[in-house]
Image (cartoon, rainbow, N blue to C red):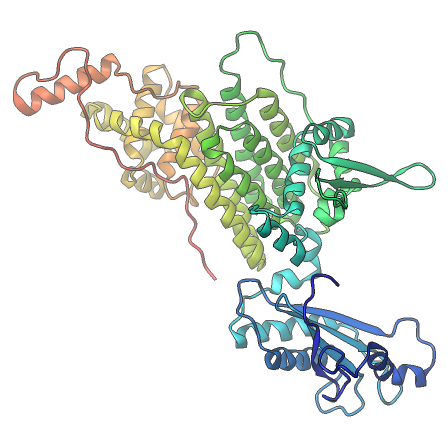
Length: 562
């Protein structure tokens, strides 16, 4: 295989097998003949070859041949190929040829001319490899070895793909860029025709493979290339388990709601669709919290990836990369062999479609505030997925969900920084009776422990300003708090005040905070100045310059436990 270099034996059943990689007089034919000795004596066997690859994580140190040889002995013993102390075990070899992995090849006929008992070998080998990782100080890859997990996660790029990307100075392999392009074409697509049209618009080549009957069998995709050998094609299954033709058609069968038509002069369209998307993600997260079944998680993950891809295509440059990275991380939280809940998938896909139809958004004003709102909700959604996987013992999936949340926090901070700073300044300048009234509303609307966290947190001033603004607009602060707190639990939030701020602004449709001073700001500033100096020092119509506010609170943080 062309990605392998310097193939040679590191172990064998007796330590004396011919090694064409090191002995110039040894041949592959000789090696095959000695391996098959018992098979020939036993008679015709349909399936007599046992093959297993054992790979270390790319971040691990390179193991020596001696270490790989010892590991190979442990694996064949655990599998039942050559149990410890059994002189009649099967013949086998272990080949090391780069990329920090080995291939174990064995025949399944023992020296006593009986068949090896391999039933359940997957679980025994898995247990042994977990022990090997612990003893050798290697990264725990137990999740990636399980059949269920491997069936769900995106397919790993191989050695030549990684080296080609590095040679061309590309951050991502061709397979990874192709997978992202296919997912973006799928986000919110109503049917196959729309999906294929979007692929064409991205320059992605595709073919629909068909059976002799003419029925569609599968998809093939390729990126345009100037290489003499032509494009490199990947089937849907070579990209990810959920990008096969049947899985994609399942999404189309679930359907998608068409967004409302865009009205002429609707300047708030992009903000409106983001607020609606945030409501959808809040409901999806609540569903997983209330009914933590695999089907619900599958639906949430699948739909959230489509929402994130739609957001990355319509968001300003300041947050686009982080949103895309969050979507890619979330791909590794998939649940295998579980049918997704149809209603949740449809709701999330509809939100993705509406985001795309709403068009590109700016990073400031109402659009920036709406973006901060939906991103805060997506952070919480990623945390819910992480908590579910952690409870199931899925360490790798939980880590991937945490990685997605980290990227989303970064994107959130870029949209939330300015409006939170403005609200914080305004909240600190509220008259004491107004602030006391909002504090009373918090204590009445929230459970005591939540109220304490909200009032003691860094985001309290911004929330107080939002409640005062809503009250001035005719809303009941206590009712708004009760509604916002009931839309999703706040225990996961590092700053529940920030989460409540965005939900209340969304629910009451308050305008985005602006730096221009309002009449109330000017009166407050003048009153504070008179209180401090006994006279007015701020010119009329000019806001007093406040101290630099604190950084915007992250919408949530979850304590990692092992």
